[in-house]
Image (cartoon, rainbow, N blue to C red; front, side, top):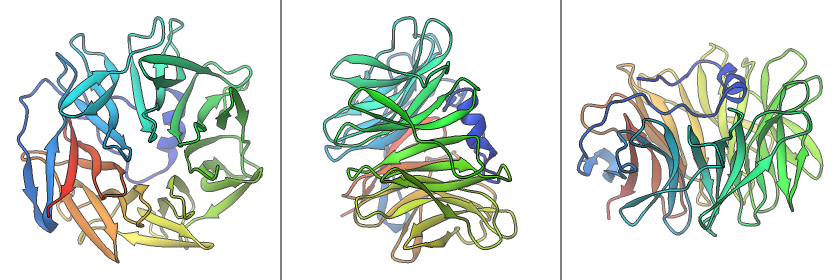
Length: 346
């Protein structure tokens, strides 16, 4: 089983250098029924594409539509839409049947991610109403991926440039713009954009470490790290401007953090755990991600009201991760090899 990197941010640059997600290499398994866990959350599997044996959920919109990835009968992974108990293949770019993925979906049902093309490289892609559109590359680049789309249709992600350095981009009105880097940096990637056009992600700095950034009004701001930490990344931003991500702490462990009002706030870990990260936040300020546990497993969690809730995993799984959350508190991600939905019990 593929493991989750929980100790360094170097994974982000490696993620850009090849492709953003490699689906868990798990053999086909039987559907798992919904299960109830502590703190009144129910976990339900979302299924796979026909013939597929593994899937992951990545994002959920206000209509309850979930996107992510699923294997197909030939073993490759495709971008998938999970809706009303059905799993729909979102398609690929011409020649790109080897691999595709969807990472974000807006309230108009438009999804973004990547699809391989005939050259063997991934390109950032828009999946919209049965059509897959190639978003292209920065000048001189050869691969790219899109990580987020807002309700205005603005898209962010990363693309290699002519120097084969990953750079954060904003795609708006048909134009892909290089957002640059923090001072002294060479690499960057954009992970999310809210409807105000505020972009967050990570950039290297002069010492080659990666720092979380906020890009607004044409300027990239360094969001810093936890005290004593040397690396950070931002993964999501809500309409209130609250930003979540991760940062190394003074002891070298990675912790989930909230960047707010110039401060970097440590969201902590489950009791006995040493590492965590935050991947999503809704308008209520509820934050989701993962934390290691006292036993060394990795569990999806919710950070809210000063508490950390263990969202649990499917029976037999030692690894689960929450990737997206809507304003009703529905959470999507994966447990083992299954795309799953966590819902709060009433």
